[in-house]
Amino acid sequence: MSFFASVEMAPGDPILGLTETYLADSRPGKINLGVGIYVDEQGRIPLLPTVHEVEQALVAAGRPRGYLPIDGLPAYNQLTQQLLFGAESPLLAEGRVATAQTIGGSAALRVAADLLKQVAGTGARIAISNPSWGNHHAVFRTAGFELLQYRYYDPASHGLDFAGMLEDLGKLEPGTVVLLHACCHNPTGVDLDAAQWQQVIALLQERRLLPFIDMAYQGFDQGIEPDATAVRLLAASGSEAFVVANSYSKSFSLYGERVGALSMIGADRGEATRLLSKIKQTIRANYSSPSAHGASLVAGVLGSTELRARWEQELGEMRARIHAMRAGFVDKLAALGAPDFSFINKQAGMFSYSGLSEAQVRRLRDEYAIYALDSGRICVAALNRGNLDAVAAAVAAVSG
Ligand code: PMP
Image (cartoon, rainbow, N blue to C red; front, side, top):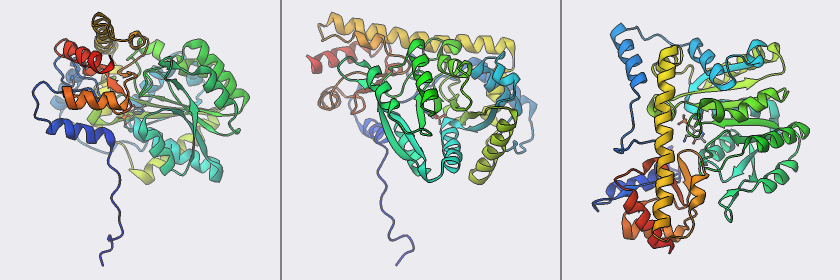
């Protein structure tokens, strides 16, 4: 009997499974809207010119490959703090932010989950929006949290169920962690506005709930500064403690380089110092230290005034293309006499909850070789001028 005989098959990832089916589809003109990455007008993952420039300089310098510190590249962490909180943030001046480079946004979530579980003990609970990115549940469940949900998406309006959200958050036990998407909510594309953030932050303070912001798409809705609204309002709110996990996978188009960071905000410098020591202990026991290359690229771009300005333009081009595709899609559907899809223009970021049912998604796949997630989530960035007509025609046909 093998040592591993009792090991059962783990369920496959539904998104990766969809990609496999797509790749095996031999129909010409097939279109994959199920992806979770930004692709350009030609359907390619862009290599940003600023990133390429820094990379070429790094290669030319022929640097040795030592280990990074456990908490990563110091310049990267400092520049990350400035991007998240603003260079003039009192939180930074007061030394209240403990930041560590992590292996993508995913490891920021996992390291924080492990640490928060230590702090909260057996009663560790987290409330996650319904719906949310699937890995949120997996990460916090694996770290030993009890998972709770709060209402978020309203299928009737294709927008936010704000009253439901407030009601559910208002019922949580003090000490519960509340996971919030900073912007470009994955999978719905539905975000809070500044006034709604203010209300949520006040409620979290009053109920003594711990805000945990996940920011994986900074710059994909309105720009670096406006997309950080949730973080900035939280920083200005007087909240003593909160957590921010951020990812550069999308904003630098550096998916495979695994660049992210965890920032934990304490009540004062001493608390932040203790938090950083615990973050480092957690990282050490998991993967010892992060990898150097991607962080060097990000730090190289953010650390140069000239490159940073150009990067913001590159980011702006990605953003503008997404907005143009949203508008183009809505216009074409309207011209075809489809039901009203104008809500897609109000959603933010790469994703849209299209409102298509599972049966309609299946028809798109079977009859038109167009792939979307069963939930109806489509990646707006996968649309381009070459496939927009075909997608709009098919969506109009299945939703008529
Ligand atoms: N949070 C959300 C909401 C995401 O959508 C993603 C990426 N899909 C992540 C975190 C993780 O990002 P990374 O790929 O950098 O680990």
